[in-house]
Image 1 (spheres, helix red, strand yellow):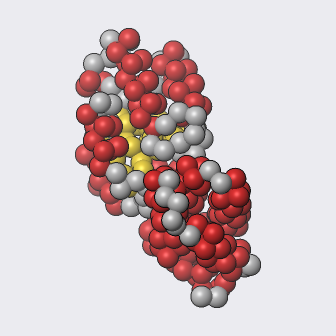
Image 2 (image 1 turned 90 degrees about the horizontal axis):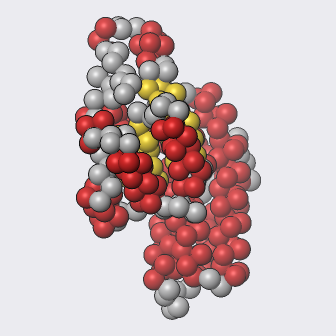
Length: 156
Length: 113
């Protein structure tokens, strides 16, 4: 799996750091709300290439294709409440695909749930059943987002 | 609040919360305001349709947009619509809440730059 491994301290010049980081990570943002989608893309685009899906159904199609072509995503940011298929179901499908391909937990896709819900039940379900790695509540906090990327060792 | 005060509040929030430059914010703002307007139309349609679950979902969507723009007073109203709609609560004054939001949105969209 691709891992962004540029170190900020190696690049005292921020522009140079960002230039080196661009394209290192492949990210799928799944979000039905336009403003959230744009802001999340804006924040994450400095760390890699961002693709977007506007609902769960589109996300599943994109993810299935990425597994088939062996061009997997390093990070999937997944909104919980969406039309067609919700984020919990998309997460379930991702884990099913990985299981069918014998991809172990260590190599599984990193999934960060994003939600405006202050809903412990939904978040617990994503952790326990779907094995998501992190969650963010809206409004998205840039500092927390970067901290999660560090914790998940997607950046260092 | 006046239209300009809302716009200044949104610009300041986007700039601080997401570390966006003045130029980026100015570029994004018209599409964000247009999106808000669309969300508001959907909310009114859901209310007119009398389906509380659909109203709750529309409330959820517009709440997320308000939160991302730092419009917490509007997000509070949207949250009430979302919660009560999803509960199927019949005693809530949805007409009043939707009208409150419409009034605020109309002020905001009056000056999207």
